[in-house]
Length: 408
Image: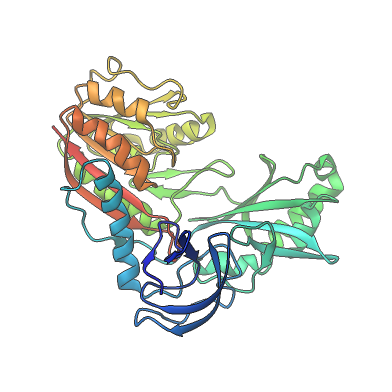
C-alpha cells in the first residue's frame, strides 16, 4: 500500500528495510511493482486512487520533465503547500500560516533546455530521462507555451549543423515578446564561425523565424533583438540569461514582492538578475541591484536607462553574494530588501540582512528547505513572517517557489 508522496514526487510505501520509493504511484493506491534497492518500478495499479487522472502527454513516465501528470490538480497543489509547511516546521516555525499554492502556469513555460544528440545515425531532440542519461525524443510537450512546443519539433536541422562529431548539445530556448531566442551550448566547434557555416546558420535562423541565435555564448544571428517587458521597462536578455519559467509566474512573484515592500523608499535587490523585481520596484522606490553576472546587470541598467522618467533611480552593483555578501553596514541606507537566491539559499547574506536596519523584506525562493533555514535566522533577529505564498510555475513537477513577506 502506498502511504504518502515524497518531496521529490515519488510516492512512498513502508518496506521491511525502510521506505520504498515508487514513481508514478499515488497515496492510498495498491500497486504491483518490482522492488530493488528501495526503489519500485510500477508494473500495475491494482486499486487506483480517486485522485488519479490520465496524463496529458504521451511521453509521461519516459521523459524526465514531468513526474506528476497522473495526479489531479487540487491535491497536487495542496501537496506543494504542505512541502512549505513541513520545511518551516522542521525549523521550529510550525505556527506560520501558509497560503494556498497559486497555479502560475499561464500559457505554459516560456523557456526550455532541449538536449540534442545522434542516435542510430539520426539527430534526436528531447529531454533526459529522470535519474538516467538517456535522451527521450519528444513529439509533444504540453508543459510548454505553444510557440516553444512547435519550435521543438523543427529544431532537428539546426541541431544537425551544431552537433559535434561526438556528444550532445543543449539548446536553450526562450520565448520573448519579439520572438524566440536560441542559445546553443556544448557545440565546441570553431568551424561554425567560418563564413560558409555562418551563412548556413543564418539561413536556418530565418527559416525557423528566430529572433536570435547564439552558439557557446557568441551571437551568430540577430534578426530581431529579443525583448521582454518588465513593468514599465523593456529588457534585452543576454544569451542564456536566467528568467522565471512562465510569464504569469514572474508577474505573480513580482506582485507578491511589491506587496511585501509597500511603503519602502530605498530597496536593495539581492541576486537581481536582469531586473525581474528591481525594474518593477523602481516604479515606487530607489533601487540598488546586486548581481554577479555582468551581462545581466548591463541588460538591467540599459533597460532602466531606456525607461526614462518612468522609474526612480536604479544603481547596479556587481558582487558574488554567496562569497561576499552585502554587509549590514553597506545596507544602512535601505529600509526594504528583496532576495532571490539560487536553490541553495544564502544564509550568510540573510545574516547580514538580519543585522541591517531593513524594515521590510521579500524572500523569494525555489527551495522550501533553504528558505526555511534562512528565514529562521531572520526571525531570530526580530523579523516576523506576515505572508507566505507558494507559487507553482513548474507544472507537474515537485518544484515549488515561495515568497515570504517579512517585516519588523
